[in-house]
Length: 332
Image 1 (cartoon, rainbow, N blue to C red):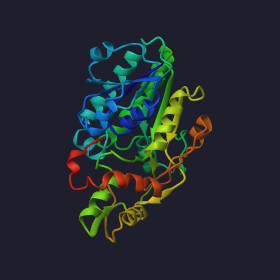
Image 2: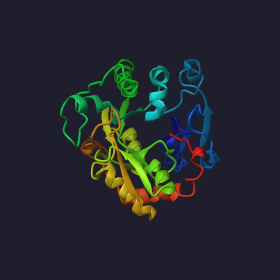
Image 3: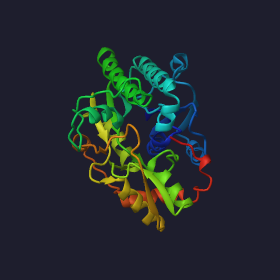
Image 4: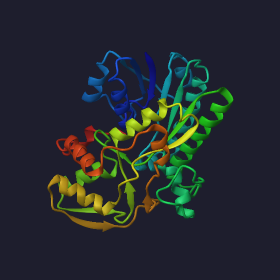
């Protein structure tokens, strides 16, 4: 039996990861979450009814809480963090405190687990934002691009900084204490149950309420990755013997699309005719973002299977009866 710990397991990626891993009866999956953004909804309730899934409510900034946990885990997926642009801007102090301290504590805890086979740290494409602003970088972008911070005084910078710091913790603790580490930098993952503070569900909501919608950054481009593919990448990256001490892009490099084209594709899936009102570009948003996923595909033997039209359709099917009561779904 594989004993697995997932931090942030009530959130978007954490929930889907726990759901997938617990499909295998030989896996014993524990979820830690403080429920600061997520909630125990019907889907999480159903997941927790599985005999091999356990929920632990706790605060990762409390080292004593972590040290009280079992030390029999073989795989740790550390996904817990304060994320989301609006949340980061409004709570930049918490981003610095929670994201840094939670990760430090997690590795303080992990260094005492004798049979730990891997700890996976969840990072982000936002670590490239400063480099993209100040220097020319190749797109699709590979993992070897040097990282540069944007204006250190900006609230938005705190998120990228906290993730860079977390990556450094992973490598330094890994070297000193023999902890096997893998870093996954997520790039625009989307799918059911991701909340409304993201461009795709936010667009569902706008189109459902109006025939004319306001959209910023229309000519910016992104490459989106469906949650099922992101989860498969994550599991393979954590389990593979080829990926220890590696930084890996988790995303889909094959379908870079402009925000304007994305909105039109969504409106077509929803069967709605819309007028798009162009707003100024979002402050701090890079004009292009697309990962080079050559490395992770080579090391894991997996490539994305769900392309954008199908992924958007499946995502809308989940959201369409929830668009009039969006406040009930604040998952991250």
